Length: 228
Image (cartoon, rainbow, N blue to C red; front, side, top):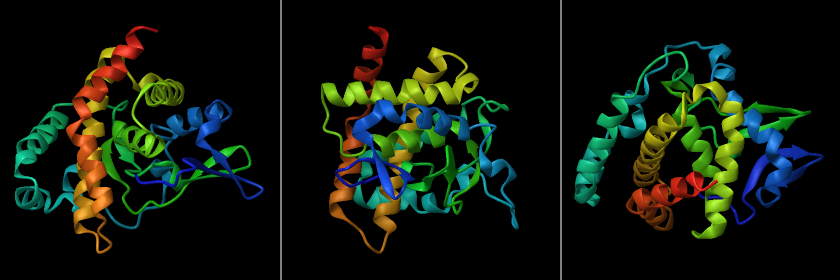
């Protein structure tokens, strides 16, 4: 989640990075990025030598309740509610299947005109919107909150949505479910940072701030969508 100040989409042309600030020039790649998350996802045909787990059995979350109870007991109920809400999300061919589980820009490279996905270690069965949440989280990392954040967030979601396409059933589905999966992503990161041997208090604080301000931020974002 925590990126450099360059906010790069990790696509390389002649060893040069495409900068996030040049968002409009990245539009075609972002559309392709969205398409990779659903039935075109390379995970679907990726050679597997063992059975993959389902998202609820993610090893990262095996000690989640214990960690939250110790460090942030006030968040435990919200975490449990987030999981229960996700469990009510419809499962069908457009929403659930083999997913990458960590498809942020750092795991993408450009090969010619095609994006190539790296790092399949976390690949599992889950909701495609989890990949969308990871992409959004990575792309928006470190952007100061305010009008510029809203502008960039709207551009990214609308553009990646062109590739995600028919897998967003309607606007209500997107508005109802995307915030839930994004918060789930934040909790995964929080637990990962606490369990990491290279634990960073700065990273933990940033994720905590995202969780605590999540509802207000999503409300502001979708109010902006409705005015367009």
